[in-house]
Length: 313
Ligand SMILES: NC(=O)c1ccc[n+]([C@@H]2O[C@H](COP(=O)([O-])OP(=O)(O)OC[C@H]3O[C@@H](n4cnc5c(N)ncnc54)[C@H](OP(=O)(O)O)[C@@H]3O)[C@@H](O)[C@H]2O)c1
Image 1: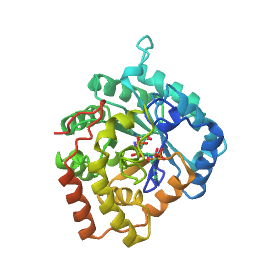
Image 2: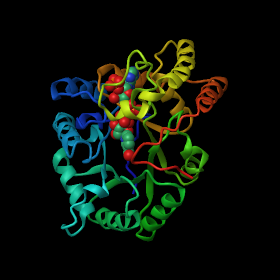
Image 3: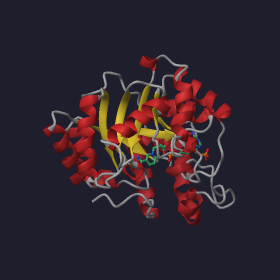
């Protein structure tokens, strides 16, 4: 139960394509198509989405674009979100997979996740049944702590399957998956760790500060708006490191996440986000640089746990 496709060093994320109020800017399909085209052209062919991202909106837009690419040339990752389950269906996990395949215009999903831990053991059992019915390249869990990850892996193993991937918030400002031993567990058990929000939804891109706030009314404005002063201290240091490598601030957190042995998922809403991501995958940070940016991040001591998350102990 492992996708035979080679995973790129970076995945691209399409949450913002769902046009919910998280990001605060309305994106239209015509603007997104060139981003998708560029990603495929340069080999960043792994896209992460979920039905929950705009209740099918993100998957639908992506699904139109996927039609233009041969099936073997892209890798698609989507999720079962317990809060969106159709509890009248025989197996809500299968129902959501089928709905996603339909929206994404594909007959198989490369990576399929349990999105969070609401009733997770029950849904993981159901996922095992789904995986016996449909060929799924890789099974994953998201927003799970170490104990919950182990439990999910045991359930899958009892069903002759294997946990292939974990997807958690992991950034310079939230290293709890590292300190709680999740990264080590993944390494020891041949599980790919996908880090989401390595840019803290743009807070670590250098684009936002007290004079240039996040879009008004967005979730990211609410989450980071009051901390832009503190975040600016980290961005200044990231800027110094970026100069050493002749890149932009936003590329350093991505390079850092790769250096830590993880596969970052970078949310892309502009063409340069995709080309920047590719260049970020070629940066080799020195040990001193990693130490400096981690220490600076630790010193500003911000809690970036979001409303759907919990402390990873
Ligand atoms: N499993 C889960 O519960 C979960 C939770 C969160 C995310 N995810 C996944 O992870 C993906 C990434 O997370 P995210 O999109 O929330 O946040 P993110 O990757 O931390 O930030 C993405 C935002 O950063 C900015 N950005 C990206 N590249 C940039 C560059 N090169 N230069 C300057 N700015 C840049 C863009 O915002 P602006 O240009 O608008 O400023 C973009 O929308 C999601 O799309 C989703 O697939 C999963």
